[in-house]
Picture 1 (cartoon, rainbow, N blue to C red):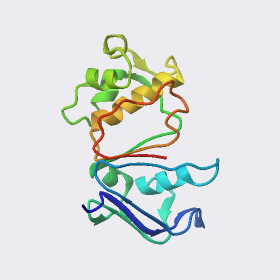
Picture 2: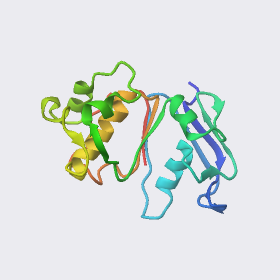
Picture 3: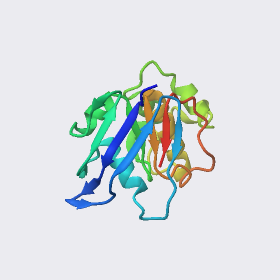
Picture 4: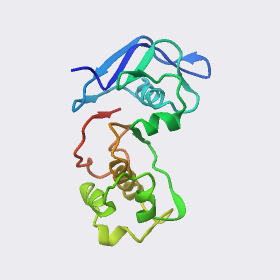
Length: 178
C-alpha cells in the first residue's frame, strides 16, 4: 500500500533556520504514528511544516500527500486536500456559537455526533458561544470535534492532552499525533 503521507529528506526551516534534518516518514491510510521528545525537540515544528503553516517550509526534501508533492502549496490548499491540525492552544471565537464553528467546512457531519465523540453533551454545548467563557479543556474538545466535522484524510495533534482531560475518541481513517 502506498503511503498517504510521505516525507523524504525533509529538513523543515523557520525564518531560514533549519529546525530538523533529513526526516523520512511514511504513513499509510489507517496507521497511527506518535512522535515523542523533549520540549523544543521539533515535534510541533514538524507538524506545522507538514501542514504548510506560515513560516514553516521544507528547507530541503519533499512532502507528498496522496502521491502528490505538496511542499510548496499554501496552507489552505493543504486543508482542501484533507489535512487538519489541532493546535497546542485552541482558538476562541467571540460571537460564534459552537454549532456554527462545527459547521464551518463540515462535510455532511452531524455537529452533535462530533461533540459526543469527544465526550461533550451536544444539548449542553451547541448553542453556547466559543469564547473566553469556555475552559481550555472545553475549547480543546470543541476544536477536536471541529476536526472530526471536517472529515480530513490526515489529522495531526500537537500536545493532544495539554488542554484536555481525556484523549479524543475518534474514528480516524489516518491520524498522527505530534
